[in-house]
Length: 113
Length: 115
Image (tube, rainbow over all chains, first blue to last red; front, top):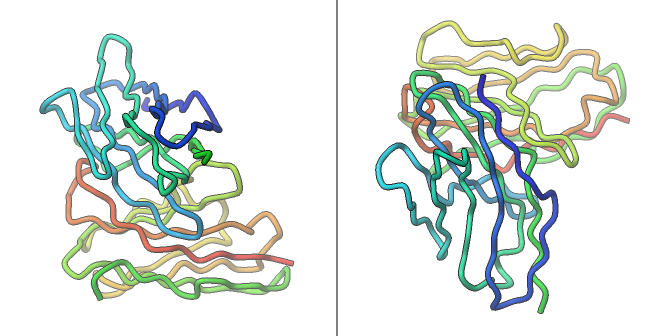
């Protein structure tokens, strides 16, 4: 069965410092992995996705994530946080051949001036 | 429209009343999902439609919840005899992909408050 664990419910960083949002997954088969961002009172927007091509995936707004099969991780990083990055971030896993996406419980990112 | 449209954006209702939430997906997207987002929780899968196939209703929490999709496009989620625990944001998403490998496009949600 698939599952996803976001290790931190809240993360605070100072503007201009690196961002690390952690995600571990469990999947029986070859997973597809996604990160979505949700700004207040908005729908979710795709940041990036991994579907078995390069293990280092680059997304929008300077975010990237690395698929590490040995660690079953898909952590999201950004070299330098911006105030506009403050939002809720969701890690998502799905198994090939299925139609179900499994969402993590989210990490709320706060960016301090 | 350019994106997924949901209405109403906010709905306040009294316990025991029925509510209908509407989702208008992106044109040409055959897959449509409904999720429920409660405060501090992840997204809870409710129901999945794919083209003209029978929907997967396995995530509906009780028989008070139902959904339909007419003509493979617009979908309506109906909650009968609402309870306070139904208060949440209901999100609709659509995708052009057959399986769960593609991007989901989300609406802004319908926030339901049951008094």
